[in-house]
Image 1 (cartoon, helix red, strand yellow):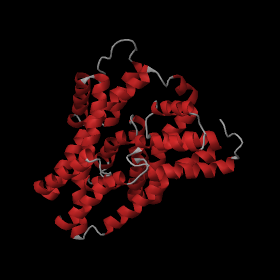
Image 2 (image 1 turned 180 degrees about the vertical axis):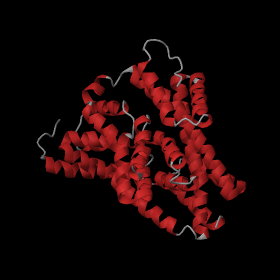
Image 3 (image 1 turned 90 degrees about the vertical axis):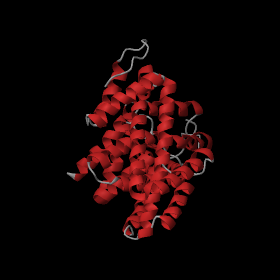
Image 4 (image 1 turned 180 degrees about the horizontal axis):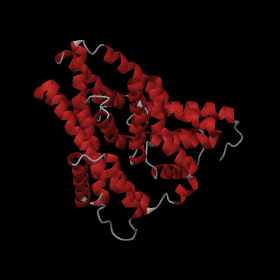
Length: 194
Length: 176
């Protein structure tokens, strides 16, 4: 790393403000925030080289869970130890959690007022459109990787298990993950039943 | 025990949810609305709308708010910790192992195989929001808001925050 000289204390402060900026300017969920993380970590502070950044991203993607907390956490730890890790994660998530709690708190206090309730109702179709977009995005990526048939078969089997038989989605997704991990490589993908 | 339930409700989606924060949304809905009934479809939709209008990762915003609603500050803390810590600790602890497997076809296959299932759950959730809206606002308003939102978001690439604000104004004026 280029800036090994920075003291840990100063590093935590820098980490905090770097990821604070990522947190408040990063719209559109975690994956959309990666370029912002890169701008801070590689371009502005040179904590990582381009290559290291790509490695951290690839490693983060081998694990489940939100990418926009794994990257700050890991980079924070690498630059500033445990304090750096905590500073980076808190900076990226905390401000908007507080904003959510305050705004939705005010909103639900006045839910009895008719026009406030109307506002809440009107937002549902918007969320529906956003969810439809995500659905399309995920299905499109999945058909690009697996083909239409395998994607549809996997989706239909999973739908039957989860919504018809009432099996918890955790078991279904977990079984697919295990199957994907254990299935020997080299053979062309046979669709992984759950 | 409420803290344990909260922990599980956010730990499970985050430990199986490959594909970043958005992939976790339908899994969280299955816990928060489906399994534990902490929120109705309507309040979940409202939370998601605000979550999408604000910056920063969606998974932690949802966890923080739901945790707070269910069990106060302690609840928010537990839900956020269950979201962030497991994969972060794994990343810090098993870095060498993960580094060696970062290009592994098996690992790539894990997210590939899970994706259609997540897509299906997202489709299911989309349908749920449609039914909810038909039920509370009726077909005409649902259609108007849905079509305008779709054009704004998909065609015009309007920022989600403005689309949500537009819907709030529409709702305040016509659905009150």
